[in-house]
Image 1: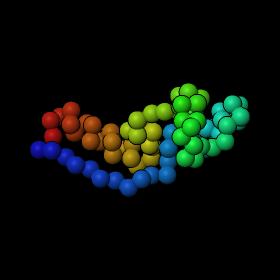
Image 2 (image 1 turned 180 degrees about the horizontal axis):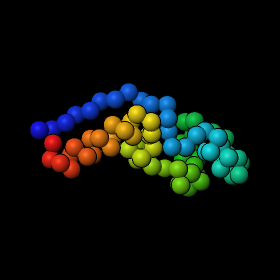
Image 3 (image 1 turned 135 degrees about the horizontal axis):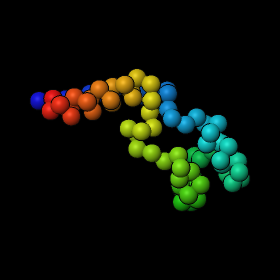
Image 4 (image 1 turned 45 degrees about the vertical axis):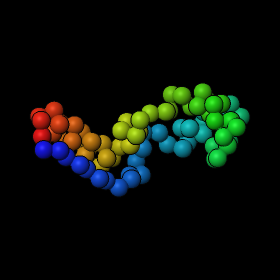
Length: 76
């Protein structure tokens, strides 16, 4: 049996804007928008904050993700 879980976006994430802003301020960069010319610069500066969505979101998403992972391990 396959399990499909669809959840809404949760507001709870691993890093806050203030965490990111602190790093950007050290590099004299504003909060990114659609600034594609500087994308590589942002990726380098924020490399420690770049995670897959499965690791970025917390709160109820983390609970559901862990539940699905455990069910998959049991072959469900």
